[in-house]
Length: 300
Image: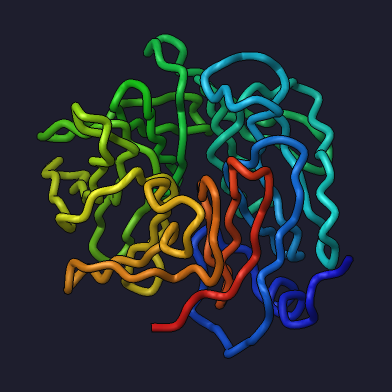
């Protein structure tokens, strides 16, 4: 089965962006759902329209070094997912970016690595095992450095693959189970969402900003959820919420001025993980259901 022509046109015409450009056009098509061998976590699109994704494996074991994780690709014009052959075994790869050279930047348990999808070779790695963590998660670029969330230890790290070094960003207030992370280049702010619950087990994750200079933490809304993916796009903050599983509300957009969110998905998603916005489209891993969904953004 092939992608609808409208989807192909958008995927093929837009250059790569891990967050996206604002050049969009009105399109109408139904949601496409692509079956994945295992549980997909994060997605990215390259300049040729290929969709890359991380997969933590057949079992949902994001902290285990079990060797069953992999990087996959959905080639331009197809809905057949394939594995990218990487020489070094992967365990539970989660965060994913594509750099300007077309290389894949990935978090895998306690490692941040750079992989060349053409050669299958590793081209740099920073291991954070000394921090006694097992859940490096989302990634965002700030200049030449990476921001990486560590969900299990409530930490945020700067990682420099060129110098193979890392350091910790220590906010003035605690954050709990940080998951999605994004950078606002206009306001020079870091956005973070939490995958957290209260003492009764109810969703209690927050949407936050952190000033990297002053380290001040600001709560962006009083809304609460089990937040996962995070994208800053056209002055608004998009996020996925596992507390709204199997509903279109699983992905919403926060108006940063009004401090209220609205649903933007056009179909239900189970386990909406680290998604991207590509033109007028959402590309969303449904981690629990072993699918990647491609759907148009719901209009305001």
